[in-house]
Length: 298
Image (cartoon, rainbow, N blue to C red; front, side, top):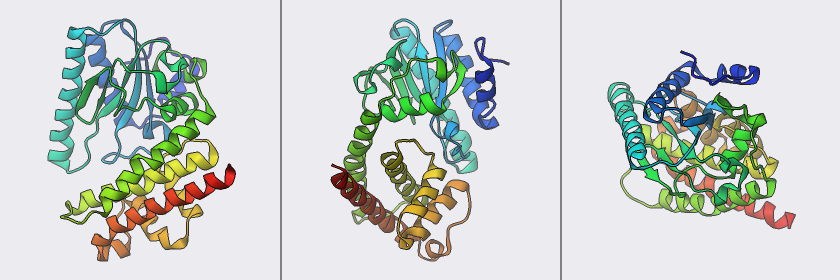
C-alpha cells in the first residue's frame, strides 16, 4: 500500500532508502494514525539512524517527525497514546521476549504546522513518544532540538508531505553548535558520573549496549562540533577511530562491533567488566578534548 500523499520524485526515491523492516514498521504506524486522526497527518518524516545509514535491527529505534493539522483534543490524544503504548508492548513481546533484541519501535514528535520554521528551542510538541513514554505538550525528553531540525533538513526521508528540500526548516549553525556543546557538558557529564559509580552491573548484553551508547553517542557530538554536520553512529565511530588516540581503538572497535551485530573484540570478550569503566573514561576524555578546542577557538 502506497502511503505517500502525492509524493514528488525526490520523495519516492528517498522512501526507498529506508531498510525494509523499518519501512514496514513506519507504514504500520501511519495506517494507525490515519485511522485515529483521519486527514490530520499532513507530513511524516523519518529522521535519526534510519536516514543516516546507521540503522541496525535489534539496535535502532525509528525516529520521526509528524506534522498534524489542528489541535489534539482529549480523544485524539487518548487514541495516539493507545497506538504508541500498544506498539511498544507488542515490540517488547516480539523483539525482547522472542528474540532477545532491542525493541523496534517508532519514537517521535507531533508538531503543529509551521513549527519547523521556528527555533526548536522555542517549540513545544503537541505530543510525543519515546520508548514506552507518551507525553503531551512537554519539551524535555523529546528530540525537539537543533540536531533533529538539521537532520531533517539535510537527510530526512519524507513518507508524506513535501520533501525536506521544500520545507521551511530553520537551520542555524550557531544554534546547533551551542545546543551540542550544552548537551555534551550536561547529559554526557552526568552519564560519566553514573558510569563511574560502583555497584552491581547489568547482564553482559546490556553492558555492551550501555557502553556503545556512550562511546558512539559522544563521538557523534564531537563530530558535529568539529564539522557542523550530523553523523550516524557508525560514521561517528569511524570518525572517533581516526580522531582519538590509539589507546581507545579497542573500545571504539567494540562499540562498532556491537552496533553492527558482531562479536566483542578480544580484550572485552576476555575482560567484559572493563568495558563500562573504559567507556566512562573515554566519554570524559572527549568532553575534556572538546572543552580545550572550544577554549582555543574563542
